[in-house]
Length: 138
Image 1 (tube, one colour):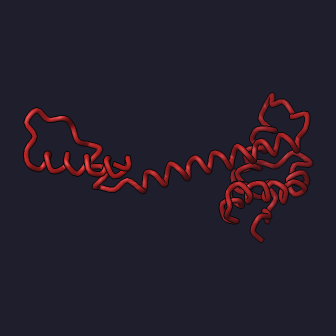
Image 2: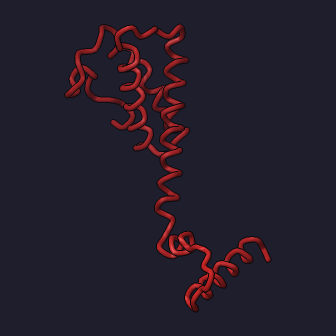
Image 3: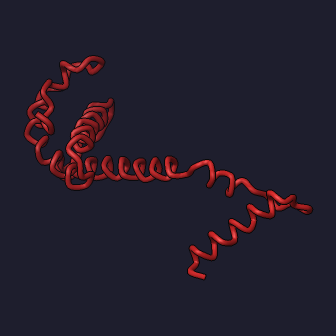
């Protein structure tokens, strides 16, 4: 079932045994955290991945040697969930812009001032000027 972790954290390869009570706490908070992630991210798959990431971060943070326990665990977990989702959204936005830039845009962005531009550079300059004018409403 999406949005609900099917295996206790203690059974996940590479994760040492959970301290007593973590699995119960995780199951009690899991649906609430999933709903927060779903509302922020908009897709079930992203929300499910983010929910798992939230509980992994919580586990690592809470049972690190010398870690302070939060006064209000539910509020703290909500903050971890929101920050995790914001990180994912920022990453998604960056990926959009990285994918969006094409070879044509790269050619335009990599142009340099030339003391004696050739015909190709002059044509490219004219194209840049036209695109800027169109973008600025001129």
